[in-house]
Image 1 (tube, one colour):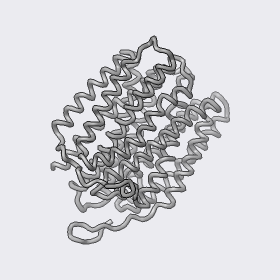
Image 2 (cartoon, rainbow, N blue to C red):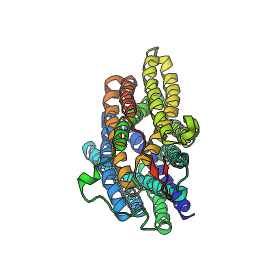
Image 3 (cartoon, one colour):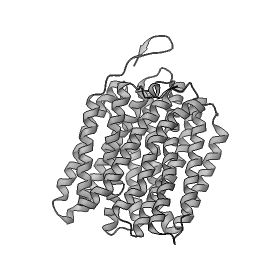
Image 4 (spheres, rainbow, N blue to C red):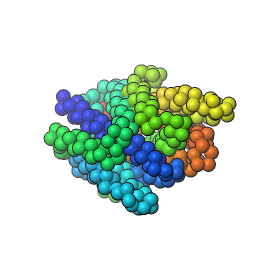
Amino acid sequence: MSATRNYVIVTAAYWGFTLTDGALRMLVLLHFFRLGYSPLTLAFLFLLYEAAGVLANLIGGWLATHFGIARMLAVGLITQISGFLMMSALMPEWSAMASVAWVVAAQGICGVAKDLTKTASKSAIKLTADQALGDETPGKLFRWVAWFTGSKNAMKGFGFFLGGVLLEGLGFKAALWTMATLLGLVLLGVVLSLPAQMGKAQASKSAREFFAKGRGINLLAAARVFLFGARDVWFVVGLPIFLYAAGWTFTMVGTFLAIWTIGYGLVQAVAPALVRGGGRNHQDGIAAARLWSFLLALIPAAMVGWLNFGQSYELIAVVTGLILFGVAFAINSSVHSYLVLAYAGSEKAAEDVGFYYAANAAGRFMGTLLSGLLYGVGGLAACLIGSATMLAACWLFTLALPPLARRLNREGQQRL
């Protein structure tokens, strides 16, 4: 029961964090676009946020193993609150260069917070699932991971909506203060309810030991770089600007992206039911990763062709393509999140998860930068071409995934 209780607490804490993280993205993007910043400059506002995540995941995984998952979750929440307060100190009379530098630095702090929190939370899922499920089928682990990931992304969708509403209703600074207060309450709950030693183990003693990952983890990490790069290359900058330029208000943009992300999260949560075999063994997950990566790569390529039919079809193409992309991407992401925990060892799961999500952050960094560059060069169509190319690379890496080795249960019998 204590493992299930900890799973619920970690999930709730990550919900609160993700709600404010999604709101922050909309606040920054729409506020500075309204001030006249170019697509490339907007991309730069998020670059340190994404780049910081690479190092934060690598170090965070080691720290969570060494000091305990609960402590790193609390550190992540404190760091996010600090980033909000720093960003709220931005003054309107500052020059454009000083404003950009200040926001980039604050975003960097929030990027560290996001990935410390993500690594700690997903490591906790591996730990609590192993404790609660014991030797039960891999399908149970898949369902736990899918629910955690899907519900988190649904909350991120609500965050997009919240960001648009707060920007119009309270303004930039008051919105940040409100979110910092909300996270303070979440932090208090984590400190009072989770055991401080949760997930603490013997961490790697050298960089060589830390980076000595299995072939499955390495290939999944490479695939993850291109999977999330392919999403962000058109989702981060290109899509919101395209919709705003089409005459949508801030609230309309935030609401639409919120609905998409909530739907995407719901699909993630039910992904085990959509995967052939339901993930009852690990090989089902590997086959699903290959199939859905291939199908996903076809969607942005088809959207590019649809955009060529004329301007009157553009909005229809984008909305329809976004829905199809969301379904396929959600299943892909959920399967990948499950597989990394299946490949990871229990003792140093936080290190394996941190390494994997460092690759995730690297993909977001690449996608964010290319989103601003490609949109400035060729609009949304150029972003979609970049997305299709990266998804093809993701699919090729999944083809090389090795079978998962059988492990011993408590009675010494082999199981998948």
